[in-house]
Image 1 (cartoon, chains in turn purple, red):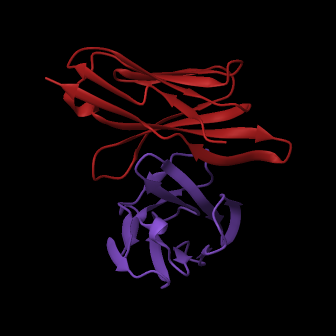
Image 2 (cartoon, helix red, strand yellow):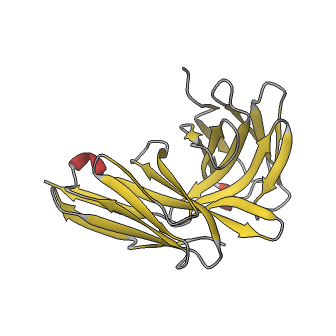
Image 3 (cartoon, one colour):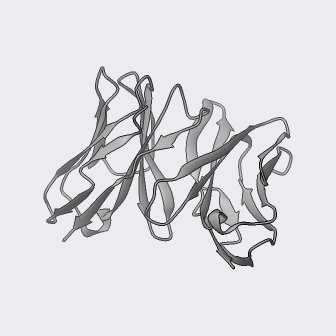
Length: 113
Length: 113
């Protein structure tokens, strides 16, 4: 079965712009989590969506938002981009919750200039 | 609260054993272990639930010490393919239910021939 698909793979944006990243989970998976990965910081949890509802949220500013659609696909939006937002953004899908095995996508590499 | 992993990095010769530790300052419900190779998505290794269990497959196993609020990942007779960064993710228990999965900053394991 197809894995987790994230688009686009690479993105270059200018400070102040906004960006939308997309994540298509494995078919049948209802939970989608988003993480920011930067060197030295590991995986920082952004938020988790389950059946179109945000179930958990990390400690990121309100510029970071997300949503999940009825087909479980999820989008993450970052507004008013800052240089520090440059990172690899990973999404992970699982069947039910964070207690189940999560499958990660290849990520979207965002560079803010 | 981000779990603390130790060591931060380790270099081993093929065939040697390694232990990676993951400690939490709060009561643990579960510990998740993932391995990420350079340029790739993290891949699930195993989940351990509270109850002090031990799990393993092939030459990779892990233990969960609920009292000490820590988990250890054991890699025996390491192979070149074990190289990568290992992340532990912890799910803590709180009054409001279990908290979101939080990852440590990772342990970089390098296996040399």
